[in-house]
Length: 188
Image (cartoon, rainbow, N blue to C red; front, top):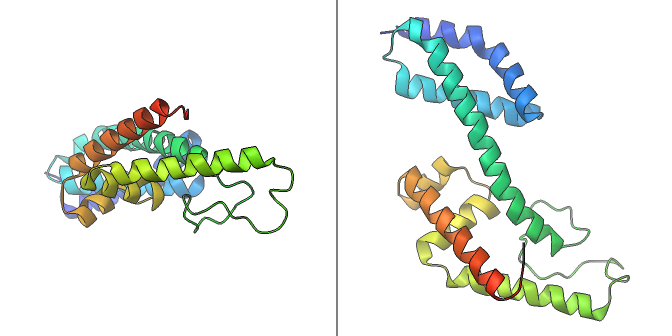
């Protein structure tokens, strides 16, 4: 069993190398730092009772898994962000709700036809309606994860359930929404 000092020394010794490894994989310093911190926390929480000799291999596996999780989250988030950003041309405001009306200031819509504006408004309304039809827990998980960009742990704490339940609710919500939107002729 690694002592607290041995664990601390180990984490300090791999910190820079792990950060560089994450930066090369993710190509974003802030996200890489988050990934390394998550990996360190997981090692300290779940494997602090392991012998010091096992820590390097455990940490590498955890770091790789956290990097893979990051890419999975990005893939899902990008799918929904792309869909919603298509509904908001010219909007760079990160604090805005993607499903708010598509009223844009200035002449941003000047080049669009009335048919395009009506079609986008109809798509937005259809998405809002389908999100409202989701079961409560699925809707909560979906909104927290993909609109408020909370991570799985934060969402689980807010919903009072396990992280696995959050993942299940989000998966079911995205599949339900995709199917419902596809049935209405809306493709992502």
